Image (cartoon, rainbow, N blue to C red):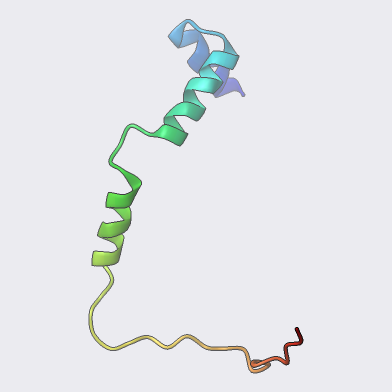
Length: 65
């Protein structure tokens, strides 16, 4: 809260307005589109041998409909 108050004072706005601006900048963002970041993340996955993930031993479970 102290940082938010000092940020609001530096911007010359109320704490509530500083909070709204902070939330807006986080939610809307000013950087690249999240999709571009996700695509870059997928491209960074190493190619090669497939990775196997352990499965719980209690599968498959009986299912009733």
